[in-house]
Amino acid sequence: MENTLTSRLSAAALTAFGLGADPELRTATRPEFGHFQTNLPLRLAKPLGEPPRALGERLVDALDVADLCLPPVLAGAGFVNLTLRPETLARTVTGYAAHAHLGVDRPSVPQRIVVDYSSPNVAKQMHVGHLRSTVIGDALVRVLEFAGHEVLRRNHVGDWGTPFGMLLEHLDEIGFPAEPDLAALDEAYRAARRRFDEEAGFADRARRRVVDLQGGDAATRVLWERVVTVSAEAFSATYGRLGVRLQPADVVGESHYQDRLQRTVDDLDGLGLLRVSEGALCAFPPGLPPMVLRKSDGGFGYDATDVTALRHRVAVDGADRLVYVVDARQSLHFDQVFALARAAGWLPDAVQAEHVAFGTVLGADGRPFKTRDGGTVPLGVLLDEAEQRAGSRDVGIGAVKYADLSSGLGRDYVFDLGRMVGTDGDTGPYLQYAHARLATLLARAGGVPGPVTVLEHPAELRVAFVLTRFPGVVLEVARTLEPHRLCGYLHDLAVAVSGFYEACPVLRAEEPSRSSRLALCAAARRTLATGLDLLGIAAPDAM
Ligand code: ARG
Image (tube, rainbow, N blue to C red):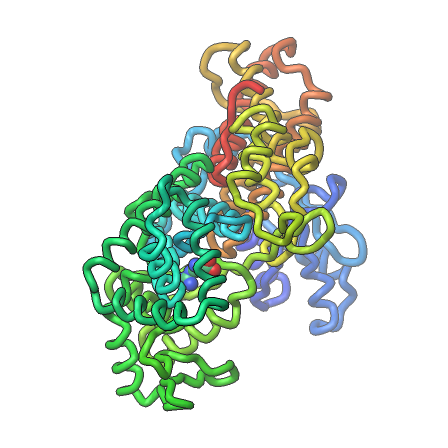
């Protein structure tokens, strides 16, 4: 709809003023301004040297939207307000309701998009930071797939590197935990770290273990695999509980790229992109801090692994777009990786690479979320509490996810369970409740709703208009990778629906209103359910 109106306005500007112009159509901020607004006359006043209202009149005279809109209104200092005809809204909502993707058209050329998300570290419990990556990444995957793209999920787990030397050496010396779960490994990891710092000789043995692991020493390898397996099972259980789409097959951890790291370094060196600095092989991306590709002891690190993984995702996986859902504190790292990969020709201009950087989860004190003694709070503990407070898994998990997704990406937010599980305000349960209420109403009505035919009351016109915005919002999230826009939209829809209930009877209405309103409710229910599903949130029929 917005696209159609935009091109009609551009055509009118061409006729009226003889120039091509973008009307920059906006959704009106107040109901009395109609549905859409352009300030084109205001913006053209200076360049054309004419009063904005005069330009507005000429624009309106040239504008041909009578088939879609009520007569355009010239308003304020030089705005043109457009209001869609009730028939236009009715027809559009009916069309979307019959469409497999609620009006979201498939792209003519779907992209292959690699989304790197969740990516916890082996032998450590997931914490709220990984919750954000998991929840945001999963919502983006769902939206991108719904928008018609092909998505490859990559769970880039931290399963390699020097810390494993400590842990494996420690486990070899004290024995594998009797009840090997992630908490026990996490504990062993911390004990290993203490020994590394304090116990003479341990650090050297730990370093030798790294060499053994990299060299493929059989006993070390077996131990490593046990650690990885225990961790992977725990991660899978968390994903199942969260209802996220990550599968064991999506785990392509750091270890996966190990035998390609040397080649990465050789090739970068061959391209003249590396210099020796204090025994290490480093890259110097312009305007950014240097990167260590190979350490002076011959080991490779996080930078080399990510550059290698990126190269693989483009060259082998055939990605058109790369998305990394990772804490904002790693922004510099991704700037470096992208810059180096571009310089090496491994990231062609046609391939977009984006770091979806999210802020920190804070405790009630406004500081990063920690336990009283300063440790990180395991994710499982938080989810237990959310489910208990909300009274069910669907509502508890939905509440946590919605709170995470609805706060803008870059922003830090306070983890406040009391607010999250509330059924009032901008919360997950509020949206679930709006959905359940519609489901109940529709079940009572029975039958299959027909088309939306009459729209008269402002409250029902409002619901219809919000419904027509759905495809635009989905595509916008696919483009900007900002799930909070979908949250805001669904909240608008739930508010519109609740205003509609207050103002308009449905089951007791006279025909043809009754059937038309039921159709509107069915379209709203499906849009809420679909939107919540795109966020990874359940939409129960009863609450
Ligand atoms: N394992 C890392 C962490 O927990 C996140 C990895 C993100 N993905 C990546 N390709 N670097 O901080």
